[in-house]
Image (tube, rainbow, N blue to C red):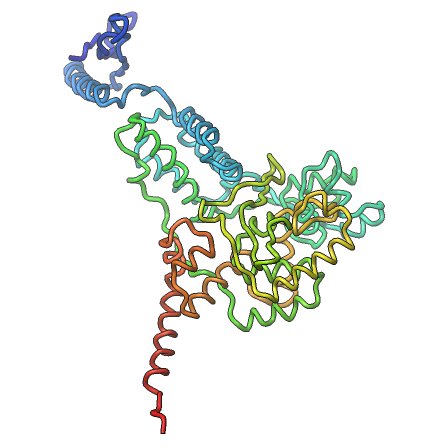
Length: 467
């Protein structure tokens, strides 16, 4: 039975109650354990009689929570528990650096909203209010943007600096591609504009026009916050710190269903034709994307030692990732099934060999890293560099928006359209489950099934008996 003790102020008026639930005795020493305690404050305006009745209810509820193991750490806030979850997942190898970085970015906004709240006090309504607030204009961090007001590329040249010189400046923390975008007259973050100004030792106001980005967060970004909160609270539920996960009862914004952005046959033809005009490094890389369906990190993380020339295969067992905190780093693939051998056609093997010979002759520093695709220093290639090149390439040739996943989706669609089963496709793409493949490509599967059905009909019903 819970013990209830009133607490009074200087005037002798009861302002709160201390509720204690005994734990029992230590099984080893036999000593009385320190009881669970909680304080219930009387709401303003509540009568004495109503307060006495309500505190009895609170005592019964608290005692039940103690018996169920829920109230063991009832004072812990979301911020404290989230930090505990992230650290334990990192130590256990469950959370990869890139995912941890993403979670900590989300945590900045989440902590501002509910970080101070005790786990047991968080309700679905608090989360719904947070999601609504995120949908308003002006909530983005680093909302200030900048646009160059002069010809930056010409200014750099006049100062005897290349774009690479600026990106390698010891005091500059800015990616090469950001400098490229600024020189092209594209919008960049204000912080990046300040770094460029610092490299040139010129006041930012003389080089850039600054303005606020008032656009709201996308539904996808809000859903990312929801998924993160749900992950933390799901762990709290498993550890019996809360009776249920309030995120499971919240209402994040719905997402529109997007079909995979696979390329049409005519687009592939244009790409292959256009690739004949680009350096062999990019030509080889894009062909690899097309024939393997690999993820971006898997392709830039490929090393020559993983190319099996005899069996015309490559082994995907590493990825190359980037975060501002760690820079470039090697990581294991997304899932266990992502570690796989991929057979390559003879044409692809021939192009790889041609590219290797060129690289050996032209880039003496290649041996430093062993990566198939390298930067000018012979080190691994930043995934952002590939994304920027694809962006420029697609604009130049009037193609649909291109990213590495467009090639991945294209690979899957080609296989489905040619009647390859979902299990084989899932294995080639390195999905953790076949259901992942069927969920992502359900639309493509429906289209391919229709084409396969028509093909079967043409074969069966248009056959003519031999004379």
